[in-house]
Figure (cartoon, rainbow, N blue to C red):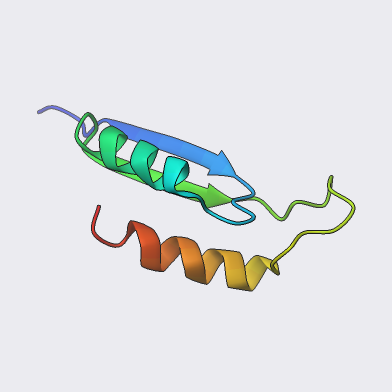
Length: 65
């Protein structure tokens, strides 16, 4: 029984760019599953988008993968 190979891609994604999406697309072809983790970004003074907005954007943009 083989185990699925999982990749984890963490970031603040403020905002998620075409480069981020391209990386998700390419990685999704190499791994069985990719988990995109949206960091709260507390280390930054201020983010452009709220955590909820960034999570919603990421969910929508990576849906095809």
